[in-house]
Length: 180
Ligand SMILES: [Fe+2]
Ligand SMILES: [Fe+2]
Image (cartoon, rainbow, N blue to C red; front, side):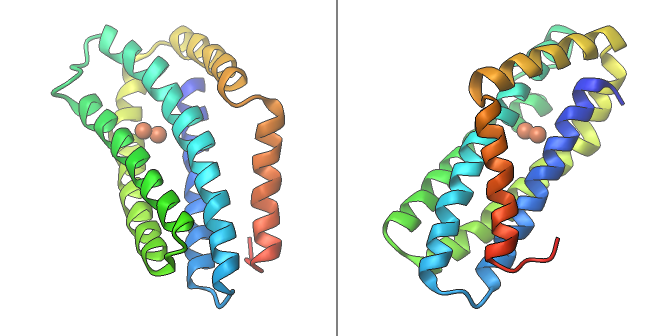
């Protein structure tokens, strides 16, 4: 496994653990107000970490490099994955409306749909695209891409926000009494 794909796999792990927390919170007996507050913060995590940081790295660095090295774009796996990123953003927008409209039943339903959807997306990348990338990219490609990931992260997320996201996740575990 190369340095860049390893970084992306680590981010998948973070996203998957946040999805589990979301399921736990929605299933819990906490009052609706707490679930809306969580929903708001969950949406913030998804917009900043999943969409801007992680999908941003894939779309602006990993996918173009793989296309440059011969993988098909629109009609291949990359085209499908990009469409799924767009669909994910639309789902986040829907969950945001649920929170704004204080519609708990729809929020719970949409979070459940989102978790199923994004887990499948992550499985496709972990099991198909990243192994392919590990074959196609040289060690130097991976090193260079990882350096660009660090720059991307600083540009779109920034160190302070990254820390804030970690603290937010730690706080969820305490507030909603979730065992790590
Ligand atoms: Fe992706
Ligand atoms: Fe991904």
